[in-house]
Image (cartoon, rainbow, N blue to C red; front, side):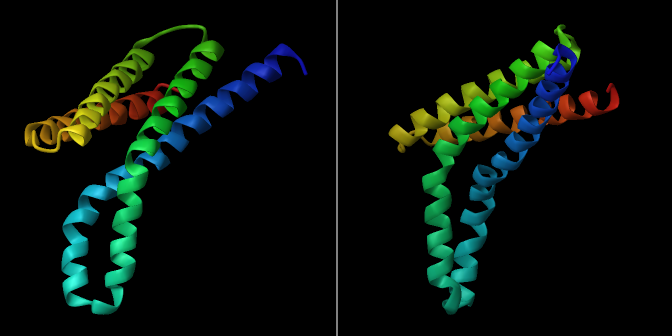
Length: 147
């Protein structure tokens, strides 16, 4: 395998990791609407109560480990694509800022998990991650249009 093929493969894997991160992000993101919708489902459909409760429990258990996995997948995405591109342009900076905001949001969320009484931490966690998602959308759109 020559160098050009290795770089092409690394670029494809890097792009794939970016999309894997987007897909993984759907799991913790589903927790918020699930917590709002599932109680109504459980009240109206008694037959779905057990399934709804287990779904919510699974989402809660997976929330933090998937958030950590997303960090490593996104970091791998950035490292591979930086290695293949050899430059750090506007799109890369925007992606890096999105990751940093998400990491700060993750730390705030971790603090909230330890101190449930401080409700403002939850709002900060959600706000920072919402900002990170918006920045990530800009990153994805710019990468797509500037490709």
